[in-house]
Image 1 (cartoon, rainbow, N blue to C red):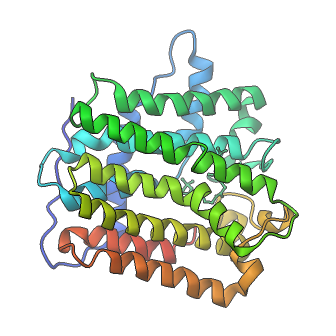
Image 2: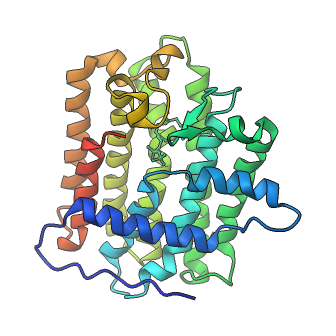
Length: 312
Ligand code: GRG
């Protein structure tokens, strides 16, 4: 099995974020291809639907954050190799959530990652099962002793972190509140809870999983969690903004769908200019949180800035 090496990050040298993202995306793609089930045998039709949504596109932000976080705290040259299955597990969870979010019973979208949504291509029941398959595969990737991974104790912590933040107290709960709040006037505090749970929880999970897998000390874990919370918030605020300012072609999903579904968003509450400022402030808080880290945290700092300037 191919081993993934720690990148040679020189001290005090600014990274080229575009190049970094391309390299990291390739690493994640290799992992996904290596660990994803192949389209053979009796379940080929089901696996085809899972593979379609997983490989149709996607920025891979969450696995990249996970690996970048691990490198801030670990000296182990093999850390990428050890944590790649965990990073891929997070992408599986994220992809399952997109498939289910697009279903007619939820956001009822035809377009995702620039292509037809899973249910449009394979049918509704098949899309539900593709999501279920990816959700379950994630925990296989984390727990399977035949795959690379950290110590059994750390693996358990990774499993618990992902389960808690992707589940009812995190992403799933946030999705529930989001749907439950459509076409209702909700206080800002409720919008913050929705954002923190629906989007922020999985992003924070990714950063924490990298930290835990890399053997972070308690104070490093706290610091990286603070970073993750703010990056997660910035990510969702920018998502709200792009829904108003972006085009369907640019986003690869239907633009303007928040307003159409009567969703409370930052631009609806604060207008575009203030929303931009709030996103910028969240990014700054994320960068500030990393003050105690040396240049090994530079990718995380740049990733936070990239999240603010992204256009898709
Ligand atoms: C169905 C349990 C369940 C949860 C759904 C992910 C989600 C929760 C809803 C999607 C709605 C949405 C657009 C949320 C905003 C933030 C977000 C998750 C955007 C999509 O993530 P990107 O931009 O997508 O990382 P790619 O395609 O690049 O991976």
